[in-house]
Length: 370
Image (cartoon, rainbow, N blue to C red; front, side, top):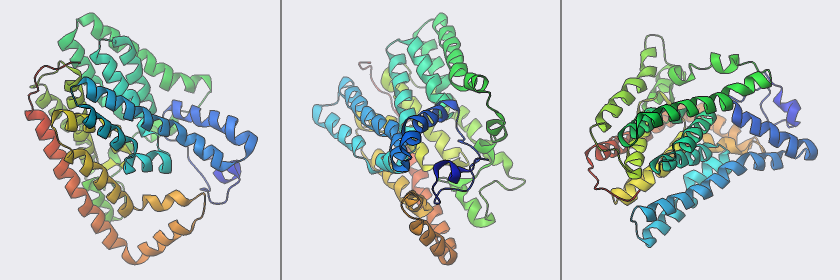
């Protein structure tokens, strides 16, 4: 446990912090930012900005990438420009990155770049980028079988071995080697690996668990529900395998649908996780389905839930503890009502997600430019 208040000399910070909770690359960046920004200045606001800069820059890069891909896939200039500004100034993207400081936009950017390279036959770079994104947050690993299947359908077996070998080596370098170099104890990550299986709540129907049992862990006897996402993903892969997988937009269609299946079936989904596939959802919905409803409702629904969840009130901790204390006071009286509304707010998300996945399964897109 780290005495975080002593490290940053700020009484508004948590008394103790068990660790970063992510694989090494992000922790290394935080350490570098600490040495370069906070250590010489002792300015917590400057350090806070340094933490958020990668996400802010990634948001901008994602907007440019989406616009470029939209034009290449046949979208007119007006539509492509609208997509650019929609993503650049999207309230959810700004909130998650510039306000909250979560780095999911960076993971989304690297994952999209990996898929883009794969569609252009750049197998080596695609493998390294996918490994990098997975070493930042583990979720992109669920797309590994998709990338291998794309290579199988469009290239020879040597390319499959090349992708597997390079991605394995890169993942070892990014996520394992730092533990050996810096003599870190991996037990913190290993002992918390059940986080992906036993936690229940947040932006999922499983948040009913907290209302009924006053805990965000699955109760005894229901632990199996934390593994539902595994057969669900397998079923998603099977259903999508009956559709084509030849072009970049096919990759986008599969990836966005599979990540949607994951988000709908995991027992714990944080609001920032939606950013991981939001750009994929945007480009396929608008360019292929000619539908703005999916991306519009996705960011609105997520942001509404976040306010009901109380996350924005915690963003003021560097300025004042008052907003969070107000939330705590409000919760003493209206906790049950807030939890009920929070559960209700998730229902449209599931209707939206199931509708989107259904559309991706039944869509048969003609050959396009990759």
